[in-house]
Length: 319
Image (cartoon, rainbow, N blue to C red; front, side):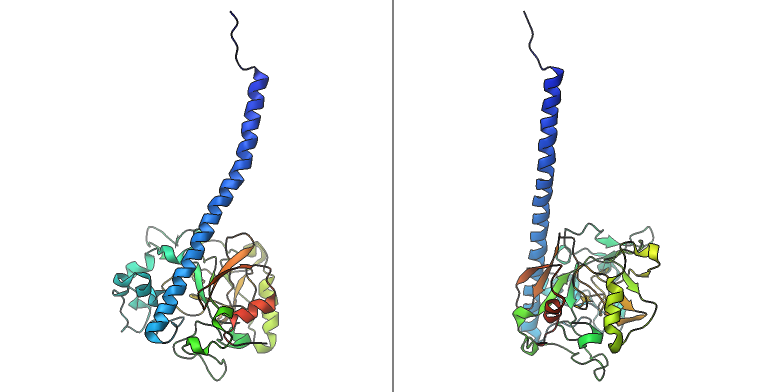
């Protein structure tokens, strides 16, 4: 009686077919997972938008990029994100960063993180220190200090050199003359990673010279041309910035600007932080998600026209 089974050739063909099917399915599964992560990012931005409007309804102004104690707008929104218990632990009578209780700096808040970003949620973790919990969402401070002053949605509570840099101080919804649906409020960034090698879209690089109003275009050009491997070309900068911790306020920590279009580097103006370039970025393919002040979220192509992107950064009509 003959026994029937697979021949070696049939087995090899079957394995080849299975391999092809796996090769076809894996990218599709990866795309589905990324679509889910992107949807979660979008949901986070919607929640932040609701929290901003609830805050404005209560105080009649939008939150400043930093409080007098150096706390970020992320901190001031905690009660509007169902984090009142954490908020009550803060000391708003203090005058410096020590008003942030040590444990809070290390608490990861999922609402402030985009799951598409592969970087660690807690940066700089070591045996000596638990590290800082990061954020992928920064507030729009405007078109850049050397361009339009502080003309975005997130400004200083007390104006920063108002005679030189106009438009600073608390912002009301009524003062956004360009329209809430035309003015960006919050965008995704690839947050800084502490204690790591310089990364083109995560490190805030330091230029070797200072720039002013007359050389601002040169500043933008220099920053945009930082190469893919910055450290190999001598570029160094700050990693304790650009979303490295969600608790620390001020321009460069809790805000980005529209000096450069998305997915380009960020730069300090030599050692001057406030007039630096802080750029939106994301791990999504070809796009960065932006919350506008009216609450809608747009997936903006990274090749967006520079003038259109600049217009979205200003609360005033530029043209």
